[in-house]
Amino acid sequence: MPKALKLNEPDGTLRWGERELLAPIEPVMMDSRAKGRAEPISSPKHLAVDVRNVSLTFETADGKVDALSNVSLQVADGEFVSFIGPSGCGKTTMLRVIADLQQPTSGTLLVNGVSAEQARLARSYGYVFQAPALFPWRTIEKNIRLPLEIMGFSESEQRQRAAHQLALVNLTGFERKYPWQLSGGMQQRVSIARALSFDPELLLMDEPFGALDEIVRDHLNEQLLQLWGKTGKTVLFVTHSIPEAVFLSTRIVVMSPRPGRIIDVIECNFPRDRTLEIRETPEFLKIAQRVRVGLRAGHSYDE
Image (tube, rainbow, N blue to C red):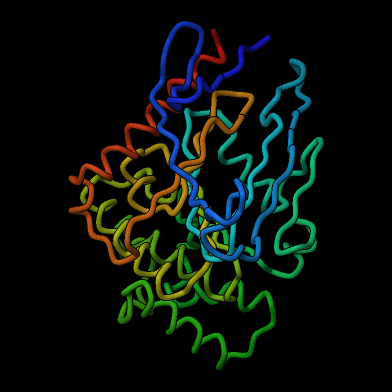
């Protein structure tokens, strides 16, 4: 039976067996008139995603595989939340459960106050996969217009929306090009534009920059932050990169090896107009170190 990760008060040190893991607790703002009751720093936001005690077990020819175990998470409108953890920990599975591409074995899940299935039918999701998944025989514009065609938008509306999305991802002028004429980074930007073309409330991104080199990845991270600022979408983002997670996110969800559990949820309170230079600051490095501590703690479940 797995050991529990315990908090040793009052210094905020996490203990695993005889080891100590630094995880300082942020103070809660208190009102002296409240007689010990914590006052919220700001009014609560509407929940875009509300996951409570979700578990998922796959039935395979070799037996059961526990992918997720008792996962609970609340995501407010407009947040940028990244999921990070080792391969096979359930990051993509969690994204697919939220998108109603897979159904949990137990627990509850609401998206904007309705079931994941209702949210999918209401076209609340835009999904960006690890590969661009563009059709090579369609131009860039027609790739972006594909979901709009399926949904029955008029020709004029399709052209207008495609032009708008191309401008958002800085690809105006490439409408008549084909995917094979674009670089990998440009193709992934087309994939993002396609996911946003029908104006979904949530953008689900499954490690979209993982196959790109570091220079291109850094550039796209900055562009994605700008896009998030312009659209105000709620973004759920899967990554294996600690610097990427810290740079992009308002919160980072650290997951353990399979079965996937949430080890830590880390706040990132950087300004929205941040640049890559922030990665050299003490604040950035402190958060990155806390992510590493969480990942090491997660691996202790296997001991």
